[in-house]
Each structure stands twice: as C-alpha cells, then as structure tokens.
Picture (spheres, one colour):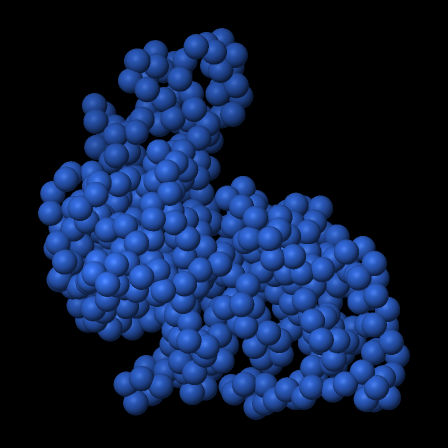
Length: 530
C-alpha cells in the first residue's frame, strides 16, 4: 500500500472521530453552564470550572473576557477541544445575546451541528429566534436540551409545539421527564424504557450519581409521576415522535433531551448524543457548490479573529476550520485572496483562553493561527489545489454611531485598536473617503458599541467618544447608484474596508420612497451574501 493511500485513509479515519458543534441559546438559558459541565463529563476538568492541566492553576471558563465575567453574559465565541469516548469534540461556545448574533452566525458557519438550549420556563425567545432560523435555513442538524427542569416551568408538551411552530423542526424526545418542572425525579430513556434517577452532588461540581431503575420499581416508588410520564410517552409513540436519524441529519427533526445543567442531570445523555448522533466532518462545498473531498490536500477557512485573549502577550489568533486534508504545523499554505504563501509556524489548540501548541489537525478541527495578522474572516487557506469557500454572511446593521478618540494624543492607539476590532468583526467600520474623516460604526445591537468602547480603552489605552448617528437603515449599493444617492437628502454613502458601499438612510420611510421612485437603482437589503 502506498504512503499516499495510507495518508488518505488516516485523514478519513480521523475526520470520522470529529464532532464539531455550536451551542446556541437565549441569555440565561444555561449555555455557559452546560459548556463547563461537558468539560466535567469529558474529564477535561476535575471539578466544574477547574482545569486539571497545569496543576489546576487555571480556570476553564469559556467566558474568559473580563467584561464577560463582570456582566455575567457571553460576549464572544470561544473554541474548546476535548476528547470523549475516543472522539475529538470541538465545542464552539457562542454568545447568547441577540446583540452578538453576528458572531454566533460566523461560528455556525464552522459547525457541523448545534445544540439548542431552552430554559423550560421561557421556551423560545424572540431575540434569538433569528439564530435558530439560521440553523434551519442551513439544514444544520440540531439537538435540543430543555434545561432547568429542576425549577418551576412550563409544560414540556407545550414546548414541543412551540419548537415545531416557531422553528419548523419536529421534536423527537429521546429522554422524557418524570415529575413536573421543579419536582424532577429523573428521565425515561425511550430507547430502553427504564427510569434514570439522579442524585445531586455538592454544588454540581462533580458528575451526578445515576441510578437505572426498571419499570416495576419505578411504578412502586414514583407513583403518579411515573404513571403520567408513561402516558405522555405513549402519546409520543402514537404521534410518531420517534428518533429519526435521517431527518435529524437533514435538519428536519431535532432529538430532544431534558435535564438540568446546574445539577448535571441529563448532561451525560446529551454528551453521548453528540458522539452517537451528530455528524462527523463531511466534505464541504466550495464557492462553486462542489464538495471538497475530506482527503483532498489541506483547505480551511477563517471563521473568527480574536485579539488579546492572553493579555500578557497582546497577540491575536485567527481560528481556521479545517475542511480537508491534514494540517501540520509549519506547513506553508496559500492565502486564497492574494495567492501568496502563508506560514503556519505558530499554531495552537485553544481551550477557552488557554492554548497549547498543536502539531497536527484534521477535518472538523479548529486551529488557532497565532499572530496571523494578514488573515480576515471568511478567507481561505489551501495547499496545492486552489479552493474558495462561500463567504460568511454578515447581518444588516441596525444601529450607527460616529466615533472619535477622546484624547487626540492617543490617535495612534485609537486607530490601531479600531483596525483590530474591525478585523475581528466586533463592529462594522464605515468611512467616507471624500468627506468627514471620523468613521461611523455600524452594529446589530447596542452592546456591540459598549464592547467596542471597553476593549478600545482596556486593550489599546484609547478612550473613545461615541455619538449616535442619524441613520435607521442600510442597503448595499454600487458605484453608479451611489452617485445618484449622494444627491438625495437624508442619505449618506460610506464604504467598508472590503470595498462594499453602504447607503445609510435617516428613516425607513425615505428608504421606501427611494425604492419606489427608483426601482432600477441598486439597493440590496443583504449586506453580504452567505
């Protein structure tokens, strides 16, 4: 057998071990807690939050940024890699707040599946419905976890109806609760019909104790709670709400699990489902729609850029999703947009804010290229055979603000920070090449401006003055139309660093009027196709 054949077989075998998924939810649904409990069950931490590595000196919080810990919310996505049941799991933790949905969307482009976490008391909330719709639009396989069942909440059957009605995914419960929300006795695993009963551990810092109870014992000890749960399971059987792997992989149904991340109830069932049900890395379609074989020469795309994860070094990391081939640290790749050689001397496997040098990676992995200043989000790296992957979509901005440095003596730091935060996609930066030199920031939500100002001051030592800009809507346009728009009152045409022209309107009514009066003008509601 030739060395090439052996290498190709090794790539395919390693890709089959990979599970790369994102966790999405609305704020406070328990996403970050679930992330840390996955690490606990995988043995990556000895207790929830404390890393075994480095003699336990560090903490494995996925919310590593100071502002995240201060505000108690996830602001930026992180990449966590660990092994579980002889599989390599790449967990992409995402922000839950709608204001950071653009960052989540970029991460979803690198994922092969997603876990949707719902608070059993709240169900699906409007502010993050958009993200769930993105999963459905991309036919991304979605596992659902009804969280916080140890607290009072809604009837789980009503949540099944809500998932199907609002997201268009058919729920197929794999586990079903015994007891009502707030009186959680355990779950029926529909695959074998027995009761899995849990016992709490101190502060949920270690794995929950599980007891498998047969039906006769469960009926005797749980009484009406067991009887009502069985009646509901019979109803689910009658309506055909059965686990269907084909429809799940097609993005049509969602296997559903019930539990409590805080107490670790049901976490093992969900993590097992990731390796048993979620797809391994598959051939990615390139920009022409052709699948790139897993064993083809190396290719990957940048889905995230993040600076200053390690304040001691003040570097930045470009996260690359490996799509094909075998990555070897030190290999020279081709930078797709320029055709120039790109060195990968500094490559790392990232664990929250922690990093370790990585020598080899395979399809499905996320490699952090350190100090890769020439890489932008969405760009492709490849070896041998040229390839380009579809661009990563951006959301149309809804809020705008002008920005200037408070201290003109810090203008160098201000512009350095502005360029870096723009590269990361923290905000979109718009400029007028022929007018006011002060840039305009564009964002999906107001918290993006707060993060921008905080990081500019904290990481670059440049405080910014932000003032609301009088714009309410944005449309992509072309150079010919822009010449007409510059003569329209209440409209300003600015450009992004990638050359895209955006027409900003001072009201939705003016936009509507312009569209009605000039249907031939280029006013694309999509900022960037994905």
